[in-house]
Amino acid sequence: MNRSILKCLKANSRMSWQDIGKKVHLTGQAVSVRVQTMVDEGIISGFTVWQEQVTRHFITMFMEHSDFSGFEAFLSETDGVEHAFKVTGEGCYQVIFISENGEDLEVFLNHLLRFGKYKVASAIRCVK
Image (cartoon, rainbow, N blue to C red; front, side, top):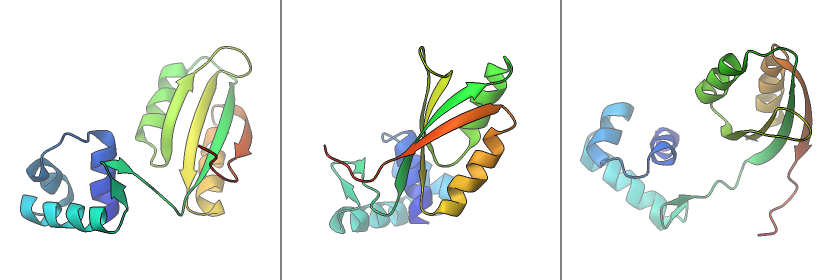
């Protein structure tokens, strides 16, 4: 339930507790209590979400066709895609994917093969 609330806050941190509650099937008051608990536990700080147990993967995507809108729709619907940028230079897109384990990454990469080839670099620690 907390993950669902965090997902809503990441999408729009200005949503009311009632609106979040409708999406996650809780009352607004229950959402408020859960958010306050996450603040107390340090999961939410200043309403910036901190995820300790995830790894960020920086994926350069090389498209094999020009179905950019289809690829962008796929990215917008996929959990774990933190950011996606259409870029110049090497590759067509830079995607930041977060995963809690290698299985999540493998499933995501297998789906990417429908659109082209990719190159992955994974974060080992945050320096800033």
